[in-house]
Image (cartoon, rainbow, N blue to C red; front, side, top):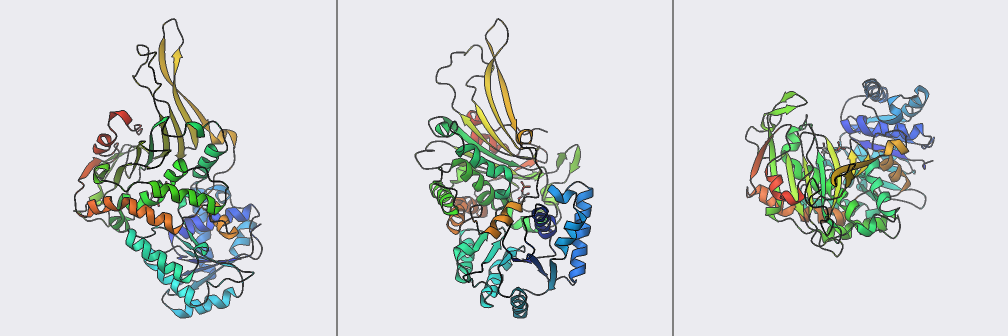
Amino acid sequence: SLPPCTLVVFGAGGDLTKRLLVPSIYNLAHDGLISDDFAVIGVDRIDQDDAGWRQNLTAFTQAAASDGTAGGHVGQPDEARWQWLMQRLSYIKGDFADEGLFAHLKERIGQGNAIFYFAVGDRFFAPLAEQLGKAGLLTEGEARFRRVVVEKPFGHDLATARDLNQRLLKVASEDQIYRIDHFLGKETVQSIMAVRFANGMFEPIWRREFVDCIQITAAEKVGVERRGEFYEHAGALRDMVPNHLFQLLCMVAMEPPSSLSAQAVRDEKSKLMAALRPLSREDVVRGQYTAGSIDGQGVPGYRQEPGVSPESDTETYVALRLAVDNWRWGGVPFFLRTGKRLAERRTEISIHFQAAPHQLFRDAASERLARNVLTLKIDPEHAIETSFDAKEPGPAMRLGRVTTRMNYADFFPHRANVGYETLLYDCMMGDATLFQRADAIERAWTVVAPALEGFAKDEIPLESYAAGSQGPAGADRLTGSEHAWAPLQK
Ligand code: BG6
């Protein structure tokens, strides 16, 4: 089980805390992983007491359990276990600018291990860390750890990410800082490493000599929901690319690490990021959704969403062509696309292999130059698919495209989870493998900087696409018919 520790959650009244953090802690507790000396202190400006906070969390969890949106054990919580956890929760009403709050926390935590979780807006990240530093709350000792967990967005561009790193590193060392990217908490993303490096058959062909292109898709059906104001300043590129999509890119394209240590894995990711060529403007397509239909229901366009300017030029879709300048990937295009209000919810990576060198079956093939595709399906399905050509039975030589599919659930029929369990567990264990390091984050911002600049100067056209469609037409021009995207299904 995990070491004793106090988890201090700043932003205790927020969505993240009730939807993800507390349910994930419950799932860990349910599995018997949390020690009796574990405690959670929630901090927020909302006026409530311990009982009020617990009551809110309980009501939220019961509602999620009954409408089926809770993941893992928390979908059917065991009453005694839930109460066990609630007894370990306490609440402090406080203002992050008030030094008294930090003195109070210091008294409450005493000499023990502590993790400070910033589940708050990004403008609070650096000031909170500085207050913790000033109060001496980040000083580690022989027998005690002090860690800080920083949510996204980590910076708004290279300059702000660098500034945030510098301010955090003034009060804590790199190994005390855990920068979260929730994609790395996904079972499906972690399993990419196992597929690649636990098997002998994939790696030999996982390179430029055999791969034609790699496509990464993170398509969503949802719009900006209630986050219009946040999204107006972020846009699809900042919201998804330098963090989530680049993490997927690292998983699929990095070199095999020599061990599973945080340093070895993160060194390989950093090397990959360093080889990623900064974007050129002609390799970027941006789009914004207009009114359309999702699941047969009419939905408004982005500019009509609450909190969004009617003249907004914020992108809700981007497609990119990236190049990795190293021996493994030289010349292989990486196509990335992500967007809201698309035809389908689908997150996946597909590796498109080169066609056979000689078209022996030219007359028999249904499509010319058929390519084998290996698809790692991440969300909502968790599966691996391969597609290839096979002979149709019968006297004539005719080929047909077939797909084989491995569903993880058929082999490992175990529970879904909320998504933060592994990340919280690893943070408490002091394993930073699944967290982002300062250098890789800064490099990611460097790679996307030319696109952000092109957006700001309006030098990259903003194309529109109807809600429920495949996205803007420019995305198809980017790939050309040679590397066409797999169509999203309605
Ligand atoms: C978040 C973005 O980080 O990731 C959201 O801010 C996006 O805009 C979400 O919807 C996607 O994550 P998931 O796990 O639902 O694919």
